[in-house]
Image (cartoon, rainbow, N blue to C red):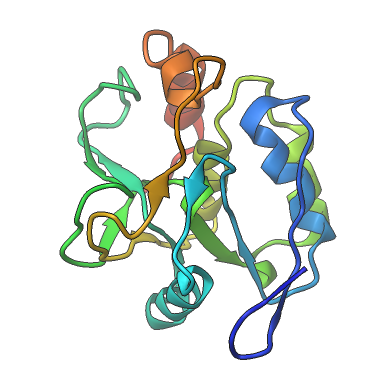
Length: 190
């Protein structure tokens, strides 16, 4: 367990790998906190990471992240390498920016936006193809909840050293994103 400087407890949960990165979704219904934040094990976060996310969520009344993208067309033909504008965690983003898909490894939502049953269904209905960011963003869009990438400087979040056996979602699906494209085209609401 971690504690923020304010004394607020932070409960961390690790997931298995049954459904790839979609395992994050399996933990959502287990939370009883007002906010649910996400972190990936291949990134290094600043000390005020959670505070920045909580403040952004409260300012915009929206789900927030330090990574995300705007699709230039719907239906989309490609997700990875397709027609989209990216606001990435590793580059400077000048302004808080509304996005279609927010990155789930660097984001935060409010617990109250979904019921336990809805959280459980997100995981139960998730395919084995990693796309937790897409699934969560589409569920938020269906409820009319905006998604924002928060302004941040380059270097706020840093990568850990990359190893040859790392299994990054982007690397795995960049040349075959048909499942992600199908899901977006069926579920994303603007």
